[in-house]
Length: 554
Image (cartoon, rainbow, N blue to C red):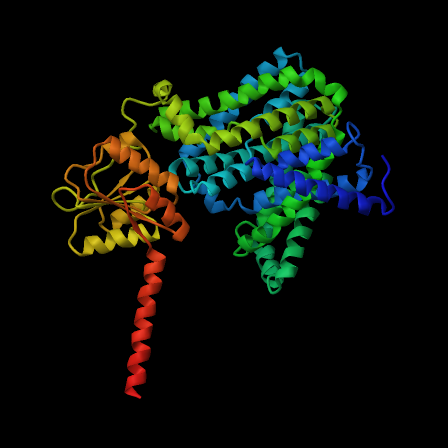
C-alpha cells in the first residue's frame, strides 16, 4: 500500500490517528493502551494493510522511547527506597524470579526451544509491568494498601533484575569467543568502573548541573532527555546496552531534589515514544512463524497466570501473611511486561535469538496483560470465589497480620473504631482521644501504625476488608465505627465484614466529594460525613461573621 503525498510525515499522522481510535476502544474495554498499540502495528504492518513504510523513522523513535522508559525507571529508584524495600518484598521478588526462570527454562526446553532462546524467554517471563500495575492499583486506590506496598516492593526488585539481566546478556556479546568466566570477570570490571564513575558524578558534579538546569523547567526537561540518551549511547559503546545505560542515567539523578519534576514531565513523553516501539513491534511480527508458537504461547501464558501468583502466595503465607494479602499481591505478577518484550528485542539486536522468540514473548504478553488486568480489577470477587481453596497458603497463626495490642492505651473497650488513619482519620482519632473518648484506630500501613503508637493512640495493624481480621476486633458494645477508607468498594467490603461479624452499632463514612457521597448514601445504614464541604462551610461562616463585625464597627 502506498501513501498519499506527504511521505513519512503523512504516514505517522495516519498511524497516530488510527492509534488514538484504537486506544479509546481499549480504554472502554478497561485494557492498557499498549495492547492497542501492538494491534495497530499488526494491522498497519505488512501482514494486513502494509501502511508502515517509514521503518527507519519509527525504529529511531522506538529506540528513544525505550531509552526514556528505562531512564524514568532508574529515576524513580531512589537509594532510600532501595534500602527500605523490606525483606518481604525482597523474598517474594527473588523467590518469584528464581521460580519462574528455573521452571520456565525447563518448560521451554520441553517445548523444543534452543538453550539461548529458552534463557531469554524464561527471563522475560519473570518481569511484571510496573507501569500497568501501579496504574491499576492507583485507580483502585490500593497503592498504599498492604498488598499494594508489597507489590510495588517486588516490582522494584524486578526492575533491578531486568537491568542486571540486560547487562549480563550484553556482556555475552562483548565477550564472544571467551569463556563464561572471562565474560563474568569482564562484566564485574565494567560494572565496577560504571559504579565508580556514577558515584563521582552523583557526589560532586550532577547536583550542581541539575541545580543550574532547574532554573528553567524546559531546560531541565531537555537536560533529562539529553542525559538519558547520552548515557544510553555511552552504555552501548562500553559493551552494556542502550537500555542499561539509560537506566543508570536515571538512577544517577534519583537522589536529587528535582527527580519528581523530571519524572512528571517525562511521563507523557515516555508514553508517546513507547507507542512507536509497540507499533514497530507489531509491524515486524512475522505471522508465518507465529502459527507454530500458538500452543507454546498458551502453555507459557497459563504458567505465568497461575504459577507466578502461586509462588508469591506460598512465600507470603510462609512469612506469616494472610491468604487474602498473598492472593491480592500475587495477582500483580500474573503477567509479563513491556520490559519482557524490550529484553527479547535486545537479544535480537545482539544476535542471540531470532524473531520467533520475540513473537512468542509478544503473544504471551498480549494474553497475560489482557487477562491479568481483569483479574486485578475484579480481585475481590475472584478472592471470594477462590477463598475456600486458598487455606494451604495461610499459616494457622498469620503472625504478621494478627492485631498487636501492646500499644493500646486506656481501659475498657473502645467507644469509637476508626478505619483508615490517613490525614482525616488520623486527625479525627487524635481529637476524639484528646476529648476523653476511647478510640481504636485500624490501618494497613505499618508506618502509620508506628507513628500513631508514638502519639499514644491505640491502633491495630490489619486490613479492614478482611472478615477474619474485623471479627478479631473488640466490636461488642462499640457504639460507633468511622470509616475514612478511600473508595466505595472498600467501604462496601467493610460494611459486609461488619454485618458478617454481627456489629450492631452505628457506622459513619467519609465522602471525598458529592458524587461519592451520593453513592455511599445509597448503601444505607450509614451516616455520610463531608469533611471538605463542612470545612468550607465553617470557614465561610467564620469569615462572614468577621466581615460583618468589622462593617458594624466602622
